[in-house]
Length: 384
Image (cartoon, rainbow, N blue to C red; front, side):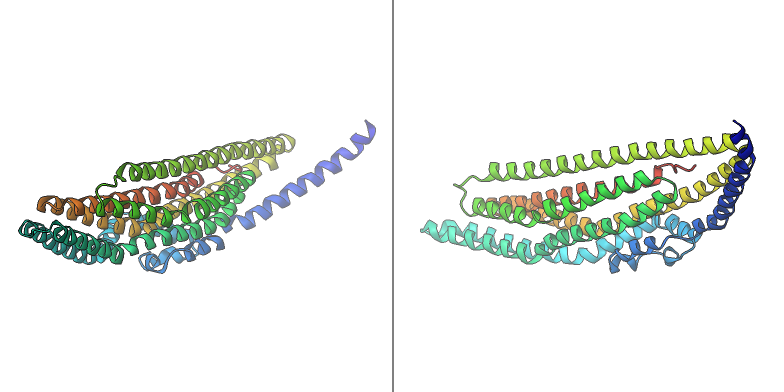
């Protein structure tokens, strides 16, 4: 007991000086939250050039206030509508040209079908129908191949954007004391990138090829009924993709939430111990940590909302192109039905349905990254 009493005062004095040094150091480094981390600019570099040209110039500033103002501008309804209308205008001319060419082929096919009755040989009429179907198919391949290419390019861009999101999310989580959360979010996004690249990116083109082949077989030879098989393949593909993304969402949400709670509990225990050991210094450190936590929370909200908006802007071109081409094939199928071109109508319906499933696949895969950025925005700092 005498030993403890003898060294108690020097020990408390040394601990007080140590905590005061921490307080001074924290005050000196606290303004770092006024600047955007370097990893944020790495995230901006992963955005495609055509999308980067639409972004406000203040978004590339190192000042968090200017970046926040730029994010507010990006979230404005007028800004998003302007981007959407520009994308529609860029793709509308191509879709109208495709619609005009397909309508011309359908009218020609209808005229040939009308003249079919004047031929005694039924094979001549079938030859006309066969040729018109092949020409429509060639039009589909020449125009809609860019849709399939844009889908694969989007998955590659999504992987790049996810890869750039890992460092900035790790830094922002660590700045707020959420070390375990940073590890959980990084591992979850790594699994997502692997699944997106291997299970989705490499199966989209083979899946579309099989569907188009079955649709062509059914259109050229109505005796071969492949409609049920085609519908089963598309439904099972989207169901498997939905289930896979649901598992990733559940894993990411559970790990991130539990790790955040664990980090918060650990930091509160440290603050409680410091406050009880030396009330004055411990209280000042606690207030300082609240100030730092508020700055980190602002950075998280800015980066999280900015990431979601960037993801929406990256998704818009692919989504608009798929929806416009889908509408083009649907209008062509309606005209084919009006003109009595049954085989062509069946083929065009299958093309429109396939693009609809691609829209679902692109949207489903984007939801995982949207959730991870939303969790970053709403996750409380452990030091707060």
